[in-house]
Every structure is written in C-alpha cells, then in structure tokens.
Length: 396
Length: 194
Image (tube, rainbow over all chains, first blue to last red):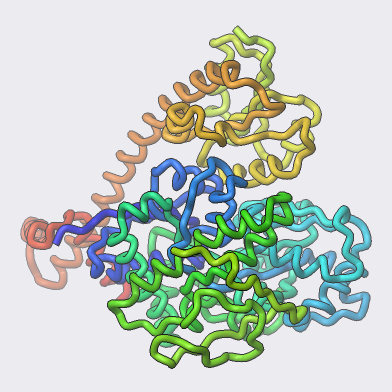
C-alpha cells in the first residue's frame, strides 16, 4: 500500500512522544500515513513553517493555533487544533537563592500548595520577579499569571515574564537572569540536576486539566485533506492509548531515548513519564499525580471550552473584542473532526463539546455515547468555574 | 543606496555572521551591528535604535525576540517581517533560505526589500553548502549503520559479507524500503534485545 506522506513539525520535548510513538510503533503506517517528523529550532520557526505550508501539521502549544487564527502571532492564518496531544506536563521552579529566602519565611515545599507558595514568593522577593517561559503564547505563561495574580502581594509591574528556550532555562537561572521559570519536562528536572533550582509546583496544581500541546494544521489544508486528517487523529489516538498503559512506560522511555527525534538521555525522560520528580538536589523523589497525561479522561478531546478559556486570556492581553474573538477561536478546536475521525474505532465520546471548566474535584462519570466515560478532575486552584455557555458555540 | 539604514545581525557563529555582514557591506550598508546572543538585544535595541534585525530561522533565540516584539514600547518595537499577506513571495523566499527578519519603527517595505534580497542571497549560498555537508555526513553515518547490520547478520547466520548485503538489499526490495531503513531497524532491534 502506498503511504500518504504527512510532514509534521515538532519541538524535541518529552510531550512530543505521541508523534514519535505513532511513527516508531507504526500506528501512522497502519492508518496509511508516512509520518515525517521535522524537528524545529523554535516555536516561532515552527509557526512560520506551518503558516507557509512547509509542514502540514505540527505539535503546538495549545494557545498557538488561537493566537495565529486571531492574527496575534506571525502571519495571520486560520489554524485548527485537531486534537489535544497532552494535558499538563509543566513544572514551576525557583532559583536556589529564592528557594532559601522562601524557606526563611517559614514556607515548606510540599509541591502541591499554590497559595502558600505564591505567598512565600512575594514575601521573599518584594522587588522585581523575573520569570522564564518557553514562548509568549503558552499555557506556561497563562498558568503563571493566573496563579500569581491571585495573591494579594501581586503587582503587575513587579513581575517580568521573559521568553527563554527550554534547553537554556537552567543556564539562565544560574547566570542570574531568572528568579523563576515554568517549563515542560525534562527541563525542570535538568535545572534540579544541575543544582541551580528547586521545583515548587507542577502546572497541574494550578489547573488540574490544562491542555498543553495540540495537533495543529492549517484550516484550508484540513478541509482539502479530510481523510488524511482523520487518519492522523486515529494514529495519534492509538499512540496515546499505548503511552497511557503503565506497563509500556519502560519501553516508551527506551524508544524515546533511542530515537533520533529527542536527543535526550533516559534519566531526563524517565521522571516525566513516571511522574516521580526530585524537587531539589539531594531530596527524595515525590510521586506526582497527573504530571503529564497523554490519554486518560478523554485527554485528547479538543474541548471548545478549553479554547474559550485560553481565548479569554488572550483577549485580556491584547485588548480584543471578546465576543468576536471567542467566535473565531472556538471554531479552531475541532471537536467535530475528532468525533468523525474516531467513530470507526467505537471510541466513547462526551455528549457535549463544551464543559464547565473547573467543576470536577474528582474523576466523574459523564454523559457519553457509550455511557462509560469518566472525566476529570479539572479544578482550578482557586476553585473558579469557567463557563462560557453555549451562545458562542459555532455550528460546525 | 540607503546607506543610513541601521541593521542588527544576531548570529553566534562568527564565520557565518562575517559572511552576512560582508554581503551587506558590499551592497553599501555599513551600519551593521553584530550581537552573538539575544540576551543583549533589549539593551542594544535602546542604544542603537536599529531599523532591521536579521536572525537565522534556526536560531533558538528567535522565541525571545518574538516575545520582545510583543512587550517593547511602541517606538523600538521589532515586528516580524510581513505579518500581513502583502509580500508573500518575499517572505516565502526568506523562510526557504532560513532567514527571519524583524523591522523596527515601521520602516517602509521598499526600503527593506533590497536589504532582505541581499541577506536572502547570502543565506541561500550558506544553506547550499550546509546541505552538501549534511548529505556527506549522512552518507558516512548510513554506511556505518549498514556495516553494523551486515556484521550482525554475518554472526547470526554464519554468512559472508557479500551474502549479508545481498540479504539486506533483497529484504529492502521486497518491502519497498530503503536498505538503510532495513539496516537501521535491525540495529535498533539488536540493541533492544541486548
């Protein structure tokens, strides 16, 4: 059978695993695809290559397709998110110097307490706080701002968010350019291993179900290549299901470490997939729930309400017309496409394509096509509910 | 020629940077500043007040520059080239050559164009050299993998080197794959079984 080539851009991060597994374990080939993975040096380069058709698909930060469709980042291009590739997976770290000062205020690092940690940060560092993120349009930045701005000690002019490529994050802390960072694994663990930083929170402690990376493609390309898009969704779905089975983790680490796609040593990949993180050099690892989720709880479903939440933050940053932005952006998360693609596999689907984000404190059974779907938890640390209602739901 | 345009080149590789700067100078632009890392960019922006910033598309520091373009004050705000659709051919050429450019102070397009054309030409020459070098490297590493695969087959089956290669080639032809892919799969499988 002749395979259809699909060129997919990605950044060499642990959460590109669904693409690498889909290729290496032939899930893509089974769907008739010759998946060609093209490593990119930066998110900006990946964005430009996608916008100009040098790649057909891409592993992207979840806010990127929305920012591009709204014309906020690079060439304006309508980009669809066909599915979510991973939920959660970021960690927040502080420099050793800041960590010491925080402990002097009586704070103890339990790696699960956003309120106490924010309080200690502002108490320990009353002047400017320089925080590194991988890209301005990233869940990293959204979670940081959402979290820190809730603390009474927060003042916008004292927090400076700086973009630093993840592999340089540890060096930037060592050189004194950064006091804090939010980054995807393995780069948080690398900073700990290099003895320059302490990890203080997983991103999941701020939002328990934050869409981290998505599979993006140009809307016009998707329209012209529906079958290929469907095949790709199925291939990645099978890859994430495989990654989700705990017994496959050792083999997944092995494949990711050996594949030419990541170029990272085993000991940096293992903590992210296994969820066991050393938060500071010399301490015992902490087992973290939901550190990085590729599949469970309908993780791959591109919820329109996730698009709404992200877009709401974008409109705040860029002073956009909120209703218009929501209408444009919600179309990008293609829950319709996702449903169509997976129908032949008989996958249990949520009854709705919107949910109230932040409503589930525990895994919860919800209305679904086969009645067996369990979602959540998806709480925000402050208990907020994010409900955008159906009035902005587009008909597609 | 627009000799008073101020250009910043961000490039850590000195030889490559010199090549680009030479190209610009030969074409009449002499106010070119080189910075090797983006860490100094914010300060340099204020100091030099440049018109154009040129950076390799492969430079990971681009994301940092991208962020600056969102937060800088309006006056010294670097904006990615042609974020509208008005000159797609030029932007395509730049991206294909591996170049990205940022314009500061809203410089007009007719003044940018010759600078970009010069830079694109230099990048294309560089890129051709690089891809030839990469092809040579790949050929060498392919040969190493095929040699390892042959060695594995010779030991496992007690056959000669020629027979091992014939077997690899036959398998590749039967499966419609390249010899190097079959060899790589064999080497990977052998590594996993160890």
